[in-house]
Amino acid sequence: MRYQIDRFYTFALSFILLLFCNGFAFAAQDCQEGGEGQNHSTMRATIEVKLSGVIKQHDELGRFNFERQGGRGGVAKCGVDAQVYGYATYGEGSGIYARYYGDINGQPAYHVHAGGPANIVYVLIDNRTGLAFRNRPGQEIPVPEGQLMPLDLTVILYAAKDNPQETTFNNSVIGAVLIKRHSTGGGTTRVGYTYELKGKVISAPTSCTAQNTDLAFNLPRLPTTAFSSIGFPSESSAVEENMNIVCTGNVSAKIKLQANKTESYDGKESIIKIDNEGQGSNASGIGFVVKSPLSEDTVLVNQQFVKLADLQKGETTVPLKAEYYRYGKNIKAGKAEATAQFVLQFD
Picture 1 (cartoon, helix red, strand yellow):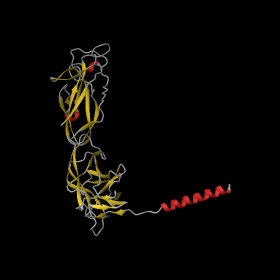
Picture 2: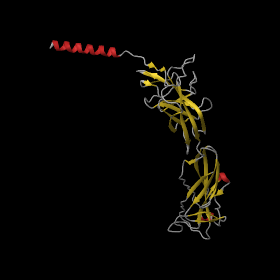
Picture 3: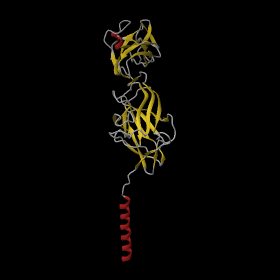
Picture 4: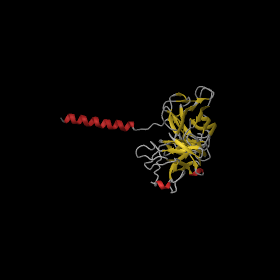
């Protein structure tokens, strides 16, 4: 039994020693000049994006890959355990670092242009390793032994604000792969690859979305004496309900009434008749008129667009006002309920 215990102890000691030996770090090697007839090559991604609808901050706008612009073969020689440096940059020259925006989905994002307010930002990723490029000190990226060929990269574009503005890329540099780190003295950036964008992100046409689409107007009970003649009652009955409309720009809004049964008001089909009028306990001879207060109380017309309101970029509260209206020669007291739909149009 003692012999077995000693053997186990010896094995455990050897195992610990083995781990200790494997703990030594070996520095990755830089690639060296000596490519196949060239030191540098440009990679380009063509951007063609037409935005639509409402775009929210940090929405992904698209993913794009790069194609080589002239040249072939490698730009350097890389040995075993070699690495290069992936920079988010506006040029392969020393110190031209991209402007950091913040992390999106756990990856560092940078402004596509060096100046100006936040609009569109990008994340640049090496597809083989999944590593994201960084502005400083740059991202170390292991590469295969042999000639240094272009890295297979993907650029992801994101909105840095709601509904970003149109942006044009004129061979805009966003990244560089270098065989040595940037240095203040320069001279380390002429060997590698430059990654650039060409094309355009076209902003979405102005669009609007109604946040609430079901409106219920609960009008007060009125005596039949308030409806002594054709027209609106002698007692106030108007009730307002609000729609909240969000627009990506300034627009003019129109509205169309869609009702199954209507009567004429001022020469147009604008009076919404009561559902199942006169049947059972239902009232008759009285209907409803709906107006737009933001358009000088314009009366809604069945199957015809009329002006609703002028809307500004952002959210606008738009009221609608419903009132009783007597249209019949004779009236009957009772329950008054009606259902209608509205269609919105934005120009």
